[in-house]
Amino acid sequence: MRRFGHRVSVLFLSVFFLPAAGFTGTASAAATSIDIGTILPLWSVLPFAGILLSIALFPLFAPHFWHHHFPKVSAFWALALAVPFLIVYKDVALYQIAHIYIVDYIPFIILLWSLFVVSGGIYVKGSLKGTPAVNALLLLIGTVLASLIGTTGASMLLIRPVLRSNSWRKYKVHTIVFFIFLISNIGGALTPLGDPPLFLGFLHGVPFFWTFKLLPYMAFASVILLGVYFILDSFYYRKEEKTVLQTCEMEPLEIQGAHNFLFLGGIIGGVLFSGLVKMGEITLLGVHQSIENILRDGILIVMGLLSLVTTKKAIRKGNEFGWAPILEVAYLFAGIFMTIIPALAILKAGENGALGFLIRSVDQPAHYFWASGSLSSFLDNAPTYLTFFSSALGKFYPGLPEAEAVARLIVEKIPYLAAISAGSVFMGANTYIGNAPNFMVKSIAEEAGVAMPSFFGYMFKYSLPILVVLFVIMTFVFF
Image 1: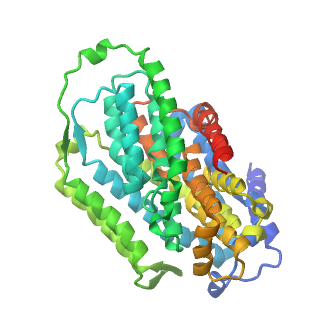
Image 2: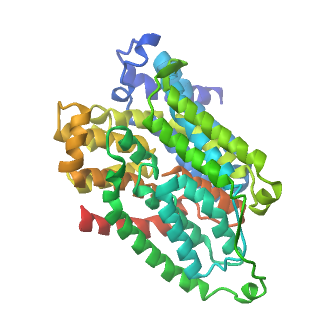
Image 3: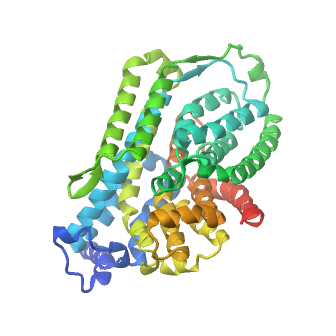
């Protein structure tokens, strides 16, 4: 057994030692100057694949084990990457790990936590019947709101009312799935507030209202999905036992905890502030972090705390508010963010990384749509967007300063930027991990007793036959 453990250790270490031939820079000063993505081999993403397979398979084949031990599974895969990574690359690895947690993971969790807490204090009380027409209307409202308050904000605001309006129904899984399709992803395509990739584009010079050029793409996808949903929900509605609905007492609609909309506005304002104001940088553990981002995180924390203090407990109780969904996301994404480091580094290395063959093969708008979309289905869609955004600038305007290149790209190459934007935003719906709200919606629905499909069940039953077919049609129509 001890010999087997030694072989496993050697195997993990070899993943990183083999490409490190000639790697001698371990000084702290070199940590930020080395492009680790040009060194790492493709098989360094194995821990990332492992955690994805764990999320997919354990709930299916060992649900009891997963329910009680998923934080440990997440920690196992995180350590499977971190230990050999640190042993081989030392300061460079330490910098990469510190960078992804300080710049990405902590702000990511703070944003989700604040939206989760604030939206949990808004209680839409009253009777919503959960008919096909009512459900379709709620999905439409959420799709529109997603571009105004973000996919995460709209998802957290509306998921509980949707669950309550359908609580009497036996067939409701498809409603939550289409909720993820439309509100948690596609609806966020119209403004930089809608989804992180578009916000990154805004920070790199894409005008705030340029994303309205995505309206035809979003409208096309949304109308088709709402039509498919209405037909599907009408079919299932005819199979429901209506006597349950008839015995329910009708209550007028009422919004309790409406003051939380002020805190929601504060969250949106904090995010906008961090993108529009430049206040310099400070260094944390060798990682440069902008002061405005730290202030934004502070604003978000304050908004969440104010919501907790000022909202009556009865309102949160009516919302069936609990901490389990946000804790599940925090534990699992702590492991995902650690293990995703090699994948993102290789992707950011462009043609010089192990995925250079993929970057070089991207040439037409349809290629950009599917390349950015496919990777956004499994990786963070924000760096994926930025990679192909930068690739397009380098391909069409080599040598030009970024500001000048972006100014020409948004006028001369509209189909290319539209393809990158739509692919990154839309195809985040292909898997539970494609976009942060997906997993939170799934967790909240399961906490409410909805038997959501497994990782692969979601893909094979819903996203592949519905979304992927839709995206193929969109390729011929638009790209």
